[in-house]
Structure formats: structure tokens, C-alpha cells
Amino acid sequence: MIAILDYGAGNLRSVQNTLDAIGAQYTVICDAQRLHEAQKIILPGVGHFGQLMRSLDEMDIRSTLTERIGAGVPFLGICLGLQALFERSSEAGEVAGLGIFPGAIERFPADARVPHMGWNTLDFTRPSRLLKGIAPESHVYFAHSYCAPVCEATAATTTYTRPYTSALEQDNVFGVQFHPEKSGPLGLQIVRNFVEL
Image (cartoon, rainbow, N blue to C red; front, side, top):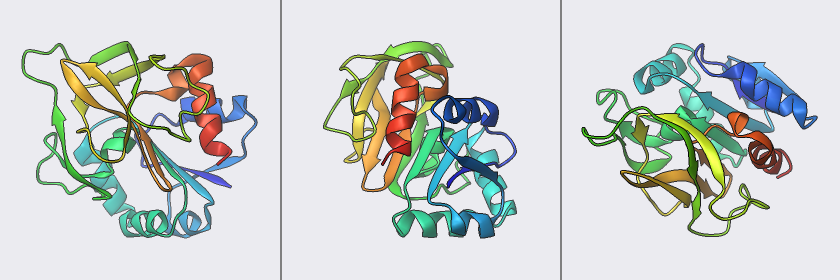
């Protein structure tokens, strides 16, 4: 069963609609016990980095989440859910991220128009199971003011004032900065790829 992690502020309905559209079975969870039973985990993200991480701590679910990721359970972080995989964010410097990947999430430069909202392209950096069947330079939908650095796990970059990680993949850990649930048929294919892993 796929578990969608509900921390109180995610874009749950859109993600549920996407899973419904491809016929995937899922459940919405907000506790550590049910997270232990999940075969795949999706963390949708809308909002503030600090709010997300504090919510995970208040739910007493952070350690279970990192434990399950470490145990090889497929994980997909969407938008803020991708950002949570890093050590920290300049959006909330005092709050630790999950630390699955090294480095910090940074705000776009001061002269950039934020949020970066709308359609932009994916530039592939290496083969990716998550992006299987997606054409190079395909357009996906973004809505964010902070972005992840390019790192070893980066599977695709997007350029908005500078290149940043728009999709990452390492073993069982996947993340997308864009919103597949708002990216039409291409987004459906990306979610289907995750479901069919």
C-alpha cells in the first residue's frame, strides 16, 4: 500500500486525484505505526520548510520516516517534500531537515521574481527510473521560492536564474521540485513510474 503522509498542510487532494487517475491503491496516514506498514511513501509539500519539519516532530514521525527510508522503502518527495530530504534550508535555518542528502536549500537570488511559478523544462543529467518515458526538455509545473543544490543524486535540473535540482533519485529515494499532480499527462506518467517500481 502507498502511504501519503499528511502533516496538515500538504497538497493532498491533488496527489490523491493523480493516484486515483492511474488506479493506484493508497491510504492517507499521520502516525508512525501506519508508516511502519507502508510499502511506498509519498510526502507532498506545500508551505514552509520549518512548518513541515516541526509538524513531523510534533507527530513524532521524523525518526520513523528516516528509518523507513533507510530500510529501502521507496519514497517520493514532492516540492517541499524534496527539500525536506536535505540537511537544512535558509527558509528556516534553525530547523534540521531529514539529512538524507547533504547541503542546504537556498532561496532564489534577491533579484529573481519569486515564487518561480509556471512551466519550465527538465534537463536530464543521467538515466532515471522515475523519469522513464519522459522526453528531454519536457515541461512541468513549478511553484516555489527555494531550490535544492545540484548534487550526486540529481537526475534532472531546471534553470531559473541558475540551475538547480528539479528531480533526484538515489536507490529508493526520489524527489521532484515540480508538481507532477499539476503537470498533466506527463505528471501522471512520472507518478505511475513511482507506483510501478
